[in-house]
Length: 256
Length: 260
Ligand SMILES: Nc1ncnc2c1ncn2[C@@H]1O[C@H](COP(=O)(O)OP(=O)(O)OP(=O)(O)O)[C@@H](O)[C@H]1O
Ligand SMILES: [Mg+2]
Image (cartoon, rainbow over all chains, first blue to last red; front, side, top):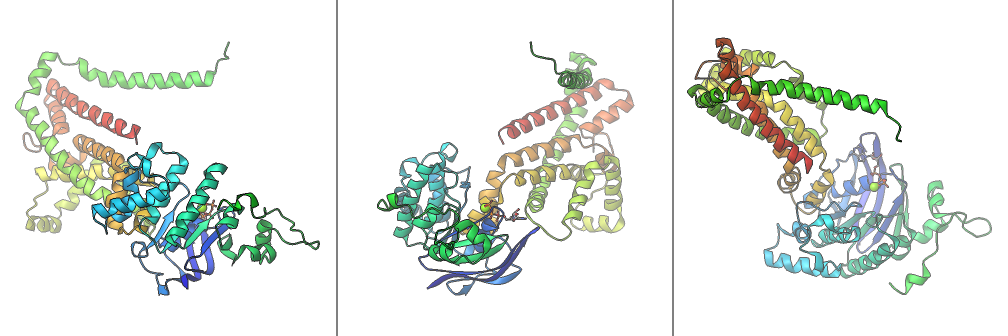
């Protein structure tokens, strides 16, 4: 079933413009979006949560037109690359932030503890956020977004600031939590491992346009655009891919 | 041996000279009157009156200024709208404006028949009264305060607010729960500057409120009146009191800026 459908979306930000973006995400999908810096990935995510005004096009969530709906009524969560944890709140209150309006204190505590346990941060709930490690901050940010059970979770390069080993652990943890909560995700990342191990769909953006949105296999074998093949590689006459895009990491596959 | 960086030495030298010059000028206030006369003047009815009046009017002005500067500063930091450039110019104009001209404008505006009549209906009689002091102080302090608050919000990434809204809080709730707490220190600093500017406002106060002895007689007016009477000691004492207030203000300001 289609969860998010975007039709011919066009949004302006100063000099920059998102042009004619169309795609749809089904319930349970895990989409990973890549693209050069400045392609407008972050801006697209912010447009989906609803903080930028659309010039043209429509956004549907569950077949309901939300193009003009205020962000607070959309139920779409976002996790930023730089965590953006509230500095004036401790870990517990950061995670509980989105629950304050709907749930009584007892219920809030239950929910926060449950999600903190799943993300292995239940031991730091009382800490202020400024002396957490990067990996801990990122988990707190993810916890804050998923504790309210958003209908759609958007993540903007959540692992890019982590070292490779932590990144691997985080990926595994995230995958488990996402499956557990049956969440639909749109995740921005340039990491082939993320695409291989998390995604069932992959997208590529360039200069405000969505060039291709498909399965990873199709992106690899049938790139729709020069830029896509630059990133994912393209089959040559001799059947080998010209550019390097690492194959599915076999060694870690069992671990997932 | 380390080679000499002559440019750096000269710059440090100039900075030292300027600091010395400022310190000597400000310090001269301390050396004119005798300690006994300062103590006596501090207890004089006129100074007590003007100190009290200054504190009251400046507090009231600060309150109004903050109520206005918060929404305006936030708007100028966050929103794009038609005519934004013009609005920004108008808001910044009074900073480069001579205070006396500002006072004259205020007098012409509030003294005009229509405005005066309209204000009288809601019980405000502005020109040459104590309320005029507050009004003049508000107009003097407002542009600076708006600037500080705008800069403060510029330093708070809007992403925090996007997150808050995606978690179900309305824009107003987000402002109260995220933007304000995160800008807390800058807002405190802005209030301190607003207060200090209000205490020190002279030109606009003199023109709009008139400098009436023991009526619209705030500290800067006391200073001015006493110089013209030739009562230098009382003038200096008023100056010292204002100096103390500004030192305190700058101290608090720097302290909050430091851990911003
Ligand atoms: N609010 C805004 N106002 C004006 N321009 C903006 C705004 N937000 C983004 N832009 C511009 O839009 C372009 C795309 O920015 P965006 O942050 O979405 O890129 P990105 O694909 O996320 O890049 P990166 O991979 O480096 O994060 C940039 O040129 C940026 O300067
Ligand atoms: Mg980005």
